Length: 103
Image (tube, rainbow, N blue to C red; front, top):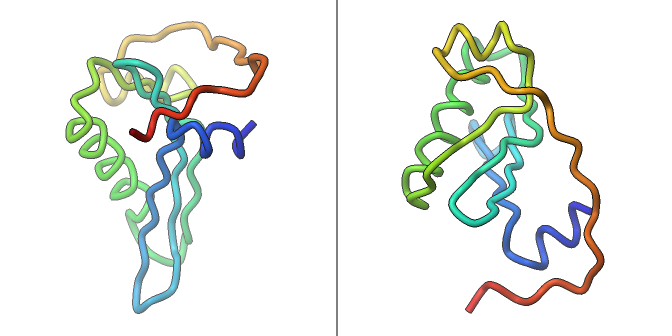
């Protein structure tokens, strides 16, 4: 699924490097005017790197002018960021191939 999202231009990947070494990464899906944060990981040896990754993801959503960004995570985390709680939606791979949206 990730490969198809990347080929279709809908996968957004953000990487934070420190001294040339990747220390944090996030993957998000852009669909129309919505963005869904799918996965993120960071090196816990660096304080607040995960928070920085969240801020960068939000800034990327703003640069893309999306109307909505959703984090697929626990409701308590969303409440701390004053986000609206919603039930998790299951995503299934649609039949391919997808049209090229890069042009």
